Image 1 (cartoon, rainbow, N blue to C red):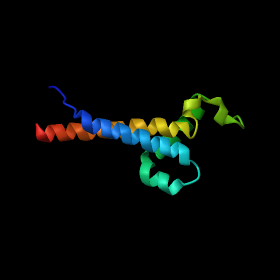
Image 2: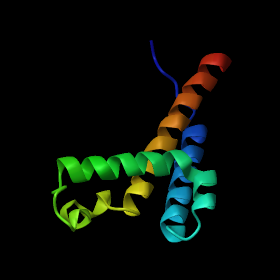
Image 3: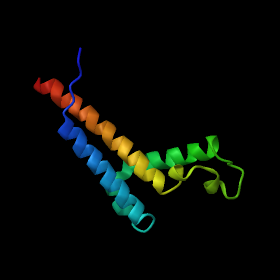
Image 4: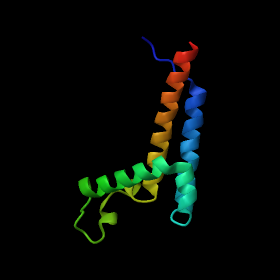
Length: 103
């Protein structure tokens, strides 16, 4: 069984995830309502990844625990990472559903 993916759908979701991730970084922490409207899953997953990174990679007992983890896992950078991953996975899922129904 071969899985067919509609590349246009996936590309659109990758672009959306990238754009709202960048917008999240630029607007953070000033306008949280717009961020939640555009990228709620990216923010929620970003917070989860950030806390996991502190607990697993960093030093959670440090008063400066934020600086004990790699830069990419710090807020707000982690929001870009989780946004791209989440929206890409949604795009792949919808693409598989679309191609299954069509073909």
